[in-house]
Image (cartoon, one colour):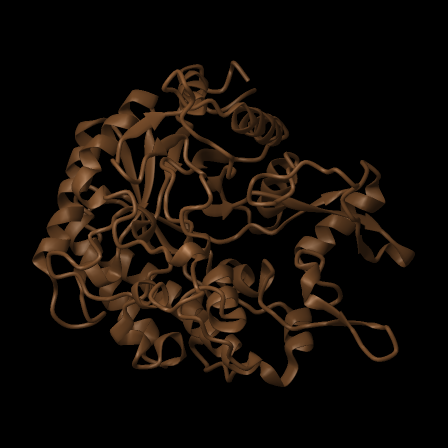
Length: 470
């Protein structure tokens, strides 16, 4: 069967990771601007103040995309660039930047897929309580409305939020990402609930104010579990693990501690699929999550679930890796440790190509919506070789293996509409600074010169053949 004729071959970026211009043209502070200023928060004390200078060099990056031949570009908006205080007065120069960017993308034949929020939260709103404030979902709806009114005559594909599991877990529980909080778990769940309400209200705003027929989704982490064997028992155990909460945190084994008797004790966190996705796609919190989180669950008002549960047009998922699961006693899922010497990316994530088969397949069966792979890629150890080129054979092999598994899912009947490679550019990798290189285009941060890596040229041929050459 292969990929559909209108399959979207894309690349993805995020505003704070590439734009720079952190203090130019009326932009307000974001929580990442302030988080980076505290010593020890980011590797080598780095920040996104300049990053890839995309704010000034966006045409170069569009030219690179055009050279590669991508048909879609997943980008995000910097909330504090367009509304410096998060609410209230609008920054015309910030809006003008995204206005020009969208026009130039369309001129190049590249369809924009706009993510409204990709982690950079206005600092002034953080000072008012951020995601803990009961008004936070209304703030987000106001911002979403602004962007839709400005861009929806040309932008038809929208994603509300990127990876809420990460900015809540890392930013509000672990404290390793902005805003750097370590909240009690009831407050973590309160921030989670407000984020879900923000998503729902943003979907309402997009549909109410769009000037053209729109398509709406989001881009959560897709926690993928891979069966240890092809047995029916292991397949069922892996699927159960993907959509369960509390019995065993198989994704994040660091969340499992031992009590004084040596028994496993699972720390409560929100690193899962269903606490986020079931309310959005099914209209309810999962029962096992309600039981496991217990009295920590915030008060849910009568109309909350109807606000969160808005009609969506596609299921987006960011999948880089997966955990292997087998059926233990009575079919209970068990985590299978990777063997010694298991291949790792430069980010020390395990290489697991079949995550791009089992992840989409199980999500499609549960939520019954077309799938977009909104992020997939790897950090590699890249540098400019003596011949002036950037050779990254590991990334080519990685992408080849993962895309073969994605095509297998397509051949098995999963409705997959597009794939967005992370990332177009080497960029600011959050708390890891510029240590990690995820791009298929090399960024020289001293000169801002871009170099298409071998993987970009390889991807060009994949796009040209619509994946037939894999």
